[in-house]
Length: 568
Image 1: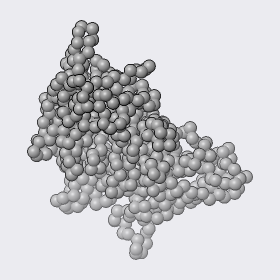
Image 2 (image 1 turned 90 degrees about the vertical axis):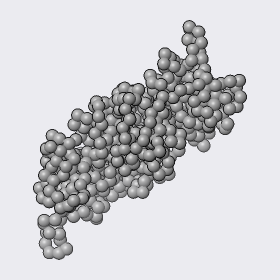
Image 3 (image 1 turned 180 degrees about the vertical axis):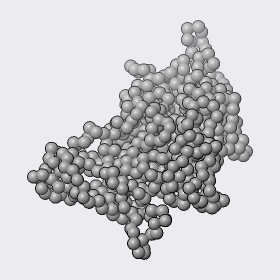
Image 4 (image 1 turned 135 degrees about the vertical axis):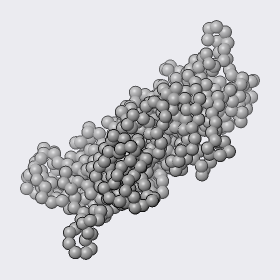
């Protein structure tokens, strides 16, 4: 047998489709993985345990029909709006509950499908079966109002019984809208789904087309050889229009009734009622049918718009998404993260940094179902999660190691943690003073700790797993495909990590002996450096390496190095 030493120093290709398991000639094979669960890819190459979800609030009402939306009052004051049947709730960026507004005209199904547009301190909501609404913040952040929008001078159309307004209670309402070039644009009219209306300049609710003067309203219909029901519009490099069968643009400045020109671009089509996200100059959307994520981007070299397939290398992770949101790079992360909420309640996360050609997909799973997610301008991410028979509002929290988490850090030393009603009857993990102390089932909204603590976290555990693609060292003797081999040594280089397992074997972080070894009655240390695993057995024709972690602890994997013995 011959020994071959090799390594994997990057995971920036993310989890790759099983269809690539033999494509060793593809460069990304050596920076990808067969499985990445509940991990987040670093643009520098490593992968780390995903952040936990801190519990904020339990929504009243049913167990379905929710959508969380970002609201920016100004640069410094941002909020999460949680729509539910007949109401909405407001949360400050730090997760503080602020207000609830009831008597809203949408039902549960509509709440989960609503589109939005925002200008200054006003958010507009659209659904074809609901008169457009506006949400405004008052003088204080606990004062919020919701009112129906009344349009004036609405264009008419003869539906066969004489001229009628194209939007009304009887003919339906716009499905989407956006602000662009000084106008409010409305699209996807229920009675005329391929028609767009644009308001007078600076007078957003006035749809008077008048005599076609430059500042007057616009009425335009997409007439082509295919169905073009408008489902989304966004203001970008021109007005971008996403329909059931194709993508279109209206470009040029200024846009007037005489100069407006719609141009068809690509023919992919968007899935109805899914949101879109803008990342690094591209507009991301879910293709009609829900099996692909595409990016609509202008190519200077081609001098044309393209709808390239962003999910080409990981189509198995696109599970008919219902929503997209993007978290732009934050102080502790240089990449953008695109969150796709899947129909099955999981979430697919794409890490992207276009300048470094980083596109990495992973999958996040939790106990329950993620129903909606939104990222605020200030970077905070909110989730609506169906857990334990109710919709819970939770927040991405780097300090948490569990989901539905409650952290208690005041009044110590203390012997119990309260505020756990949302975890009633569920096996929850206990972390106290940075040590994992096992599990408990909250009773009467509280858990008694095994010992007193100055800081504690109670929440639902989740498992992290990373599995490499079949080991294929770059070796002059040729590929290992079909040859018996054995991995004899594995070295994992980690950063600030706790206990985890390699191929089911726990790694050893604690040394027993004299100083500087830590006493046995202290939590296992957080370790940075190389961890070696030897004495591995088992010849296989297809080798891989799997890392897993079932207890709540930090984990960041920077690289793997291993020695393979191959039959000649």
